[in-house]
Amino acid sequence: MTEKVSGSGSTFDHAGTSKPVVLHVLHSWGGGIDFFARDLQAGDRQRKHVFLKSHSRDNLPPFGKELCLYQSLEEGPLATWHLSEPVMDTELHSIEVTRILNSIIEKWTVGAVVVSSLIGHSLDVLRTGLPTALAVHDVYPFWPLLHDANADDHSIGHLRQVLTESRTMNVFASHDAEYWLAIRDELVSLITQKHIVCISPSSFAIDRICRIDPRMAAAHWSVVPHGIGLAVGSEETFSTESSGNLKVLVPGHINGGKGELLLKELVPKLPDGIELVLLGSAHLSKEFVSEKVSTIDHYPRDKLGDFIRNIRPDIAMLPSTVPETYGYVLSEMLQSGIPVICSNIGAYAERAKYLPGITLVEPDTESFLAALVRFRDDRALLSEQKKKLPFAFPGLKEVAEIWAAKLPANAPQWLFEFSNDPGIGDEVKMNLQLTHISELLKVVHAATEKNARLSNEALSSIGRQQSTIESMLEILNRQTAQISDIFAKQNEFESALRIKDNELQELRAAFQQQVSLAQAREKASAEMMENGRLDFERKLVLISESSEADKLALSSEAESLQAKVVLLDRKLDELQSKRGWRFLKFFG
Image 1 (cartoon, rainbow, N blue to C red):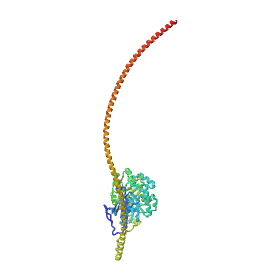
Image 2 (cartoon, rainbow, N blue to C red):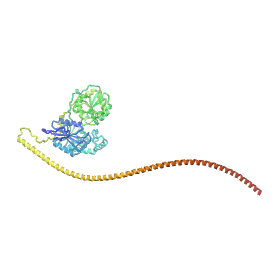
Image 3 (tube, one colour):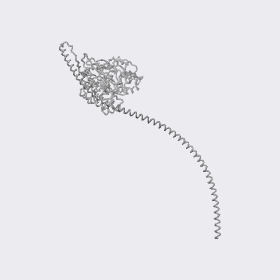
Image 4 (cartoon, helix red, strand yellow):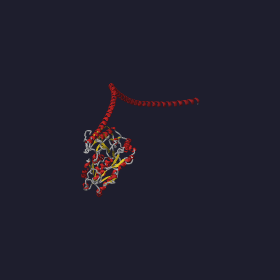
C-alpha cells in the first residue's frame, strides 16, 4: 500500500497488526520538533506512527512545496505529493491538502493526529474529525515572529509595525498582520469547537499563548514534559581534571536569539582562563573560532555522550536570549551530569525551580560573563552545583504512555482479520468471513459509486475544459491574425525606414558640403576682416599724421591772423588819433 516515489525508503506493513496508527504532522526543519517526534515513536509500544512532513527548497518559502509521508524519519518517504498550489507558510484551507489527508487516513487507517507544526501545512490537518492533539513547541502561528522576546504587546498594531520594519528578517513576511489574525481566529475556533487537546511541555508555553490570545484559556490544556532517551555516564565519567581553564560547553543550535547574538558580544570579551567549545553550531562555527573558542559543526544526537566524554566540560552555557518553550538541550546537559548557566526567562526559569544544577542569569552579555568568571575563580561552587547531578528525567516509554492516555487513537478496521481461537467453530468463522465479504462489497460498491461520480465530474470538467480550450483557440487565432497584421505593418515600416535612411544619408552628405562651404566662407570672411582691420589701422595712422600737419598749419595761420589783428589794431588807433585831431581842428 505504498505510493512509490523516487527515493522511497520502505513499505508500510499492515499485515498482522491491530495497533492504532497515529499521523504526526511536522515540518522538515529538524531541531526539537524532530527530536520529539522520534522520541514519541521510539517510546510508544501501543501504537504505530507515520509522519507527514512539509518540504521546501533550502528551507525558503513556500514552505509547503511538497508533502512527504514517512514510516520512519530515518528512512525515505512512503509517498510524496508535489503540490500544484504550494503552501506559502500556513493556509486557512487547501482542497489539495484535504484530498491528500483523506487519502492518507483511508490508505493507512489513521486513528489519531498529532500536530507538532503548521509550517508548510493548512489548518485542514485539524479538521480530520479524528482524535487530534496540538503539540505546543512554540507560539507559531498564534504569533508569526520567530525568536520574539516580546512578552506584553501582542496587538495587531504592534504586529503590523514589526512585520513592516523587519520584513527582510522575518521568514513569514509574505503576509500582513490581518492575515495572521485570520489564521489565529480560525485556529482558536478549531481548537475550542472541535475539542482538540493542547499538550505543552511547560506551563510557560501555555501562559504565553494565553497572553497572545486569552480565548485559548478555554482550551483543553495538559502539561507533559518531554522524555529523554540519552544514555548517561557516571559522575566520574564527566569529571574533568583541573587544567587551570574553565571549559565551557555551548551545545546545540545557536541561530539568532538562540545564542548567536549574545556570543558575538561575549567572545571578544572572554577573559583568560575560560575556553568555549561550541558543539553543533553548524554553519555559524566559522564566525567564532579563535584561541579561546573551538567548534564542532555537527554531531549525531545518539552520540552526544561520546562527544561529552571527549570534551570533558566543566559546565554548559545556553546563551539563548529568547524564551524557550522547554529546552531539550537543558535536559540533556543535566542528565549528563553537567551544570548549566542559562537565562532567567521562559521555560528555563520555570524548570530551574525544581531542577538542580542550574544557574540563572539575566539575558545579557555582562551577566553571562560574570557567571563564567565566578565559576572560573570558585571551583568549590562548581563542585556544589554538580553534587545532585546527573538528574534522571522521565523515559521515552513513560512519556509515550502519558500521550496515549491524553490522545486515545481509533483502532484500525482491517478486513479479513480472523481470530485464531480454536474455540470458534468453522461455521462461525465462515459467518465472519461472509460478514467481512459483505463489508468489502459495501466498500467496493461505495468506491464504485464514488468513482462513477468522480468520472462524471471528470467528464463534465473535461467538457468545460474543452469548451475553454476552443474559446482559447479562437482567441489565439484572432491574436495570430493580429500578429500577422503587425508583422506586415512592421515590414512596411522597415521599408519606409530604409527609404528615410537613404534620404537621411543624402541630406547628411549635402549638409556636410554646406558645412564645408560655410567653413570656407568663414575662413574668407576672417581673412577679409583681418585685411580690413589692418587697412583701418593704416588709415588711422595716416589720419593721425594728417591731423598733426593740419594742427601746425592752423597754428601758423592763427599766428598770421594774430599778427594781422595787431596790425589792424595799430591802424585803428592811428585812425582814431587822426579822427580826434580833425575834430579838434574842425571845432577847435
